[in-house]
Amino acid sequence: MVKEQPQVYEPMTLAQLGVLLTGAVDSLRWRLVAEFLEEYGWEPGESRSRLLVDEPISTGDEHWDVFLAALAEHVAARDGRDGPTWAGSRSLRRFWFPFNGRAARVDAVVNAPASFRRRGVFVARQELEVA
Image 1 (cartoon, rainbow, N blue to C red):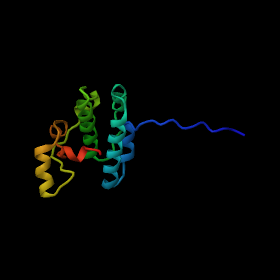
Image 2 (cartoon, rainbow, N blue to C red):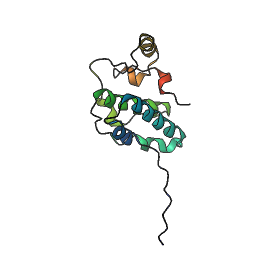
Image 3 (spheres, one colour):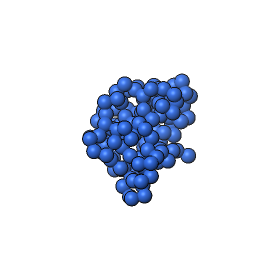
Image 4 (cartoon, one colour):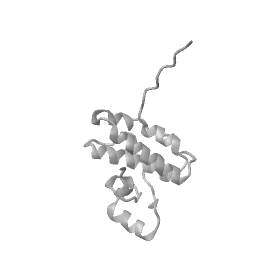
């Protein structure tokens, strides 16, 4: 009889998040982003940077590719670190408002974190908060 080895928990990396976002519908994408942020938040500060170091492959959607770069820089900045080098070159030519209602657009213009604003992605800070 062969004993199975217990599985060891590994938090999701940003590169793994990019793979999961590929081809997914937006509602699932937002749940996956929330899951990444939750797992990232539980990791000890000294090990968080390893979750951001590998560049995600393209999701097939430029908006989400740029979102991942902004997210990487945003969470790194919250930890007092620079974002990963791969994230620096990603930005949009036209602004993107993932939540496109009138009130959501105004809120995003006022409250989008800098790493998102400078890339043309307007998402309010509270949309990135995980309970």
